[in-house]
Image 1 (cartoon, rainbow, N blue to C red):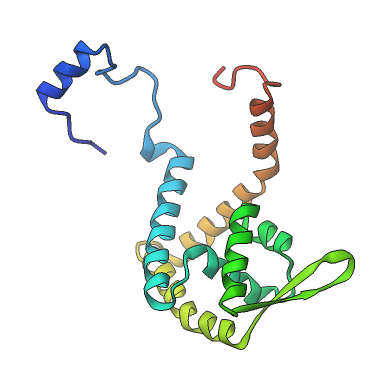
Image 2 (spheres, one colour):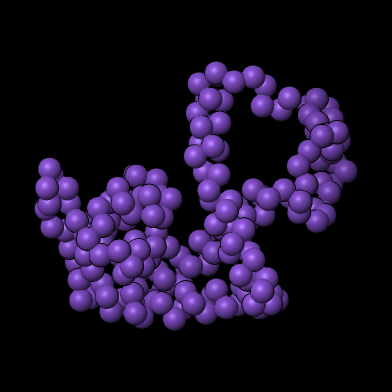
Length: 184
């Protein structure tokens, strides 16, 4: 992928300011770096989904993900949803509160202060209305792949998700300063 070069006058001013104007000798190539590719694809899906879901039902992608998860796992707690969706607790809390306020989900108290979440009839209707859109977006995403490639891709992604604990442990080590130079 090529990006447009800055105009010569801007580059000249950057040089005068002592800024880096040449490509660094060691960089990441977006098209061969798996985290970048997954991130780009995720951004495409999240932004596009939010635009469509907001237009139709005034919910974002995160609210849709909670609704979809509760369609599969009724009675989940917010903590369960975080685990199932890989969602940050603050984002899950905001999404759950939005859906509770709109009466798309309901909350029932359980043992030891647990709060179990369920779709309301209106939430189930919204789920059923948005589901075909979500599936069509997936179909479009799969357009250039064979059935075998789709199966292989999904299997590989699930296997990659299995590395989450090791990745999180590494990130904690780096953040705590308890590991050597990660670039080494």
